[in-house]
Image (cartoon, rainbow, N blue to C red; front, top):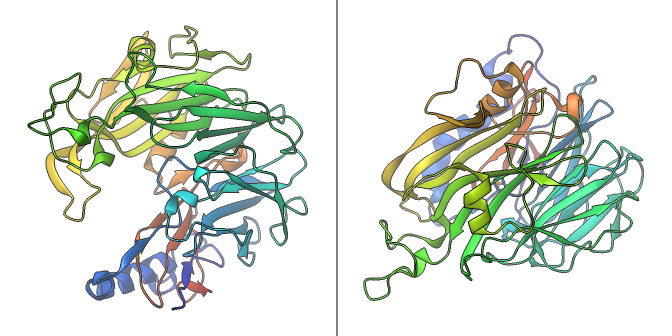
Length: 423
């Protein structure tokens, strides 16, 4: 069976959008809606991205948006969009290695101080794969590198203002610590791992885990992180086997959905990790320390992180939007027990402010990010306005995933005639 990856390639539609017939997103959405019943029947899903814990999938440098995602064989694909020329490069497979249908193998992309592109991918509790472009700002040829770590899941990367590449990842399975390694020689060698968040330590709870989002600050010198507590005890609860440390209100759901609270910490330019109030936080951060120093939102019995989006303003202050509710989203029926409600967080007057509607005084640069249809591209000021996302698509003959690149002023990067089909 030959699987086709559907991409949006070509030129941006300038000014007011031309005919919807020329809008690749609209064309694809119409065709997908018409064929959805037949596509879903007996099909499995393919996702070019993996939600919020692998990233970024786009980085802007030298007037180009470099995009990375995985194809239906789980191999990393890289393509480049020239902003001025409004044209796409040919998509290139950066490695022969892939995890197949496992979306955990998705790539994270960054650009080093010499302009070489780096892609980190292909890990789900195994060695993290790493490949580098053979030439600066050029996606056409790639050279495999040594693994930066021999056990990892969910790579997240960024280059700091001083040229240091920071690599974050979970060091294996659910309960393993979220760790970081750094490189000061453009990815040739890596530091020893530093454990950043390890929820299972205190109080001792071997089934306490976390899901984390790391992203660069506006100054290129700081790193911000929001995360939640994933409780793997919860999925094991039955009437005969209660939760070991709390009454569980919602029993019998899929293990993936038991994610509580919102926490925040940042790494400052001096290497110290601090909470929003500026208090230093000792690493690794346990659940007790997270509750005492880093808690931004207490969700009680409800779950968090549906539709999450993070941003920083020009003064490097963090903002976060997310959904809270109770939905068994990891199962086919996606049963809604408590409807998802959007929440908005920011830190002001010495405490976290929580709102059910986006505050009117949120800075424009923050609003652009949280309203964007996709996750923000990295790359400092050059990346402002760019976001990238995909749609879950049934994986059947003749179909694949659709990747959308969007700018908040000029719209979608599209091509005349609808989606291009790339083998």
